Image 1 (cartoon, rainbow, N blue to C red):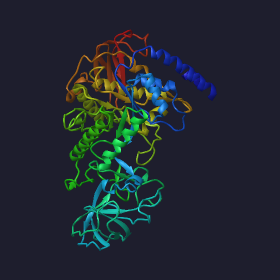
Image 2: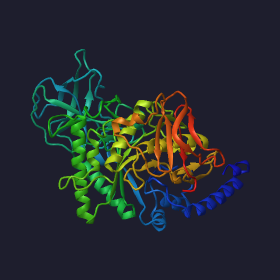
Image 3: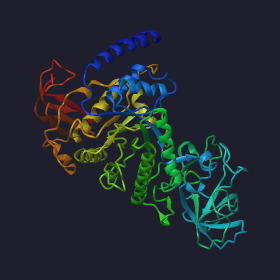
Image 4: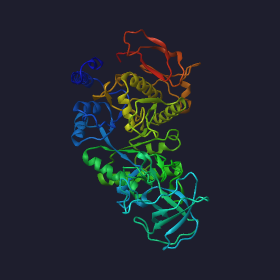
Length: 553
């Protein structure tokens, strides 16, 4: 491909396509990746649709892919590999104002405790005094939309007391005692009728998603308000059931459920102040805030109901992948989503994704929520080790943990934009790290990576699978318990070394070089087939090598 880059744009495109076609034909005659891969395709609207060749490369080398495809493209996947499973993205955490407000789901949003009433109010009272629960919370703002539903620029603001909703018409600034007086209309749409409330009763306000600064206090917004959804609500079930049903009808194998964990992503208050999650979200069924354990248990019950509904509809289970395992919590509770417990939990997830396994993409915006990054950040050694331990635990249980080399949303396209040498270094490090934890080629854990590359001037986007994933390294010949992963370090070295039946991996996760790392045998470098065998290696900071005993295996 590098040969093609010196010509004008048209010749470059034709040259790259020709070379890729040759490699694709050759690749079809070789085995699939030695350890299973799944793909994340967040796409680029500025590029043409993937070609049939691109789709065939993906379908024959990956087991699943999360992306958005046309019916024709889904058919191309199926023609290339009937067992391949494309899944459709859904954000399980939030829903926009046209659905929440226009659809009558105001009671289904997540709420945070804003404060408490300073006096009793009767059904006819419109003036409400609230003692704000924390000085860190933003004060209430008034609705600036006269109608019942927010627009892209104007907001309907409401509060919740028990099952009654009240639209906020006018607000006064909080006084010195953190008491805010507001004027409301009672018995607002979506809730119960006006009723009596007592002094000290809890006052709740919806939790918003902070992406795109979509909260009512932002008077310059031009996008819909985005509400966090209570995982115990009917809307939370309906979102996933309806989306999966629509996807299956179009030809998808099922859904990839984002933000399905023990908290809510980027939750903010009415003024955009970040809220601690999940303990800011109120559990109305138990009249207390959620904690990580209760929020996760609610997600489990949600998933149980989703499986039952889908099975009743199809007499089978569509493929359901979910994201994101909270790093450091997998072994404490999240493994439960990967092990069936009939009859209450009829089947496990088909895959539970662990984002940012080896690193993450850095973006340029303040909240790190954009998709324009061009820099990769390696995980620090502590987080890296924790991720290795979690994947090792899942691999030894043979459950479907799906670590993603970096992040899984639109930020994943950073890997497409960086130069090939930089990407190769990062992916080699990520794959070698995965091999430190894995157990068998036909096991349930999968490694996730973007299947697309871009040329140096970002005019061509093409599917490609690096040769490292086809190397027949064999199975591990040494396994330690997940808590003992550091035993893979040779004496007096900071790198990790693990032998396989036909190779070895060595990973240096630290920020210091490690020279003369013993490998416990002699191995060949597949990238340097004419070089002599090596019995030790020197590893620069945050680098790795994958070596083989025999290149002919």
